[in-house]
Image 1 (tube, rainbow, N blue to C red):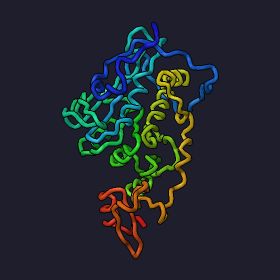
Image 2 (cartoon, rainbow, N blue to C red):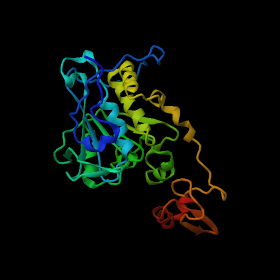
Image 3 (tube, one colour):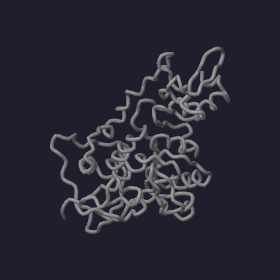
Image 4 (tube, rainbow, N blue to C red):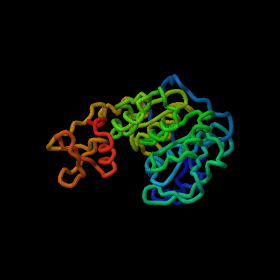
Length: 308
């Protein structure tokens, strides 16, 4: 069998994301000999000898494109020639989207048709929670139920907020986008926020940092299931040169909190850079604070003592 080729491009992702059975025609090449050697993982996962590993992506309006597409492309590009003769054996991950209804949801600038609703979706072995706009009771209930039998339930970026809302992270370590460290820690004081980590794991729960960190966590999950050689071949197929999946400490650049100054103010809620001339602002105890959005100004105004 020759190396598979993409049947869909990233540009067409929004059109074909709802077609999880699309496959590729080629197989991965061997990793380069100068790549990192296989590691003895302390937390290996055990795939079935045959058949597919179900991977569900929870979506709603406002889902961040790379949070969905990054892990999607990782899992959909895994191929193992020696695993069996059927495509389900050689391409071990079966991907699908799950939403509250079958209505299309907006992902970035495109609309994606969900494959299932929370009422009829198969229970996955890997559950991916991208950053998104919604977190309904039905979504939280389904995540709790599915996580009882998942090998991995993983959040990407501020998808950690949704996972934390389920209560599953209570008392456990987690991470999120570096701009959300402060807000996350205040909203979920019972979660052990880990700053400066690319991803964090605890049992069958995992969370990654922002955006592209989801690619690294997905590659790490592949590594746990099928070993370093398969994960390296998958990264090679993606032409992904990032090394974060090999070292969760590689987000150390975000370990130190940014400092807001009069010359370069930051949003008092999320620490994003703001334009002092145009940003919403509030005065508290004689000091002016700036915000990236009216929503964050309202959050501050509701309890300024928490944010100062």
